[in-house]
Structure formats: structure tokens, C-alpha cells
Length: 249
Image (cartoon, rainbow, N blue to C red):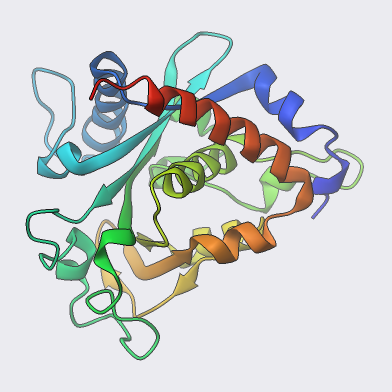
């Protein structure tokens, strides 16, 4: 990989994108429209609807992340962190139900960690205009070796890295320690190579393709995040802290 040669990541990223905490109702609706475009219209994971917004019961207890393209001002990507139900913290998160028999509980048992500090990453989505390579339409977000370029022409996968840094920043600001998710093994490998250590904790299940239950330990990621990413992470975290502080009580 040739990422150390991309220059000032913080400044380069800011030319193209910003990462925001979707705390206002207006911004949440923009996120839901991205999800509808990707999950309903493009990939057919969920049925289309007349509101052109994809939502579910977990949105009410989720932290929503939005990726904005600077050139157009549009929200072009999103993700969320779903908390357990505070009134019933032992109620399984969606992945726990789907992967009940697939999780290797000798590695980690989501039912036995402090559930006040766990979340599930889900609804990662990027508009098709920003997944331009052949084959990217197979999933809602993509990353491959091609994103890294070559030694002579290095590139950086701004979109997935921006979304994951946003998720990491939101998790830190809300005291989250364990971030569970269902992921493609290939995506986990690529993100781990970028510093986002994703641990596979079970066997694959069929859910919109083969997906593996996984966990990200927030403190471990912060320990091993490449130094050249830290200024961008700090910027995203500080921006999101201000956005959360402005949220009405």
C-alpha cells in the first residue's frame, strides 16, 4: 500500500467531503433518502416506498452519520450505530438474532459484555455515482486494492475511510467500546489493512450475500490507527462534538 504518499490527508479529504453527525431531522431525512436509493431502488434489499426514505424501528435509538460531497453539497453516504434498547438492554441487537448460532462465543459473547457500551454498525450505504468501479454495484459500499493506486499514482479510499472515522468518532463521543457488525470478509480485510482492525467472530451467514459476524474494539483501533489519519480523525471528532452539543435536549 502507498497511503503514506498521499500528502496531507486532512486537507485533501476536506476538498471533497465532510463527515457530519445527522442530528437534525432535516439531515436524518437526507440520510434516509440515500438509504432508499441504495437499499431499495438500486439493490432491492428493501421494498421501495412513496416517501423515498428507508427507515426501520432501530433508527430511533441509532446515531446516524452522513457523508457530504463538497462539490454538490449532497449527502452521498451514510451509516449508523444502533444502541441496545435502554429499557431492555438484554434484548438482542439485530445481528445477534441473525447470527445466534454463528457467533463463536469463546472469542466474545455480546450477551456478556457491558451492553450499555455496545452498538451495531449497520446501514452503510454510498450512492452509486460514488461507487464507480466495475462490480461495485454488488454491495452498498465497496473498497478494493484498486482504491490504493500504485506507488507512482497513489490514491486514497476517502469514502469508506471517512464513514468509518465518523463511526469511530461517534462511538468515542458516546462511550462505546464494542462495535459489532455483519461484514463481508473481503471488506474486513481491506479495512483492517487501513488500520480499522475488524475481528471476525463467527462463521458466515446468508444475509444479502455471505456476511460474517465481526467486532471492532474501539480502543484497539485508536491504538493502531495510522498516524497520518489522526489529524483527520481529530477534525471529524471535534466537528461532531459541536454538532451533538447543539442537539436539543
